[in-house]
Amino acid sequence: MTSRDVKEDSAPAEQVQESATSFDRTIMGLPVLAFIPMAIIALVAVSLTSEGTGMTAAFAVVISLGGILMWVGNSIPYFKVIGGGVILCILVPAIFKYVGVMPGSIEGLVASFYDTSGFGEFVVAALITGSILGMPRSLLIKAGARILIPIIVTIAVCFTVIGLIGQVTGVGAGYAIFFVAGPVLGGGVAAGAIPISEIIAQNSGGSAAEYLTSLVPAVAVANIICIIVAAVLNNAGKRHGHRFKAFNGKGVRLPEATAEKLQSPTAAVKLAAMGFFIAGALFTVSNLLSDLFPVLHAYVFLIVICALAKIFVPMPQYVEESVDLWYVFVANAMIPAILVAISVIAINIDEVLSLVSDPGYMAMTLLTVVIAALVAGFVGWLVKLYWIESAISAGLGLADFGSSGDLAVLQASQRLNLLPFLSISSRIGGGVVLVALSALAPYLL
Picture: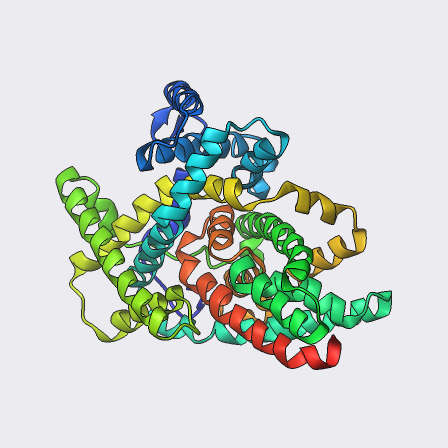
């Protein structure tokens, strides 16, 4: 992942991501003048349909919107530097829904598809499996354990600094930690804001649902800030990475063998199908373990299974190539689609707007993300991780929207192969946040 001690000879993942987001002439491999008319036809057809038409139509909708928005955002000078395509994919569909211009049939189709298909699990399982099983074994061993150190230090520093700011400004350390820093670092809404609201209700009285309304805006806005910071870090690495030793690790590198396999369509299809099956099979085992031990999310078990397999099980090269090729396909084809789906079903513009009206709340939210990135980068550098990669993995991975936020941050930073380590931050780091808040609640609430 981020270890400075490991050198690799394979082609950088950054090159894959740059080609995946370079939409000046093509969108999803099609010429722009062919993709846009086809996308418009698909969107109009679905909007004129009275009922949802299933997975095929849903894929057409989210890929159409995602492809166009990613192309537009990445074609605008300066805006593309801060992850313009990712930001548009996350915000524009939610804005369309907010102002009432999104047809109900499209909204209903996307919501139904996402809820019933497990689209998020489909994408994340492919990326985690391919990321871990496709990375060099020595890299996993040296970098995996180190990432826990900056995660823990980042949480401690953020709580301390934001708590002190809350105390000095008069809103109170408890409010600053439990309503800003806690939900920002908690790993999203389901894994973070909801249990935090229950902790607050248990110690302060009242309804957890009432507190949740005050927690979600910080999570949503922090995720957008994380995307911008990720893109800025990526640009800083490209421009100034040579000035500071161990500043920029240029992401994780992909095996060259996969590119060679792509030259044979038949071999590529067989390998991708094998990778599809392996990712799905491992995820089912992870789900079972999560049912048996609900304290940990299925993604955590998937990371552990893949890591143990990579470390202790000798694997044929074609197996590693298969999960890696499936990863490359999903990363290039599905990221804009899943961002659009998340925007339609999860982003509430009213909540975002309500946060903007409170400058103090907004400033503390911004500061939490910035502190997380800076502390994680510096502490990671101290334990011999690359500064930028540690800031993204241990810092922004804590502060983003959870699984979907991890994908957006990594797309903006052009480092999708860091997904397992952001998942560690979101899941295990989020668990550490909940334990810390439970311990602090009797004293601060």
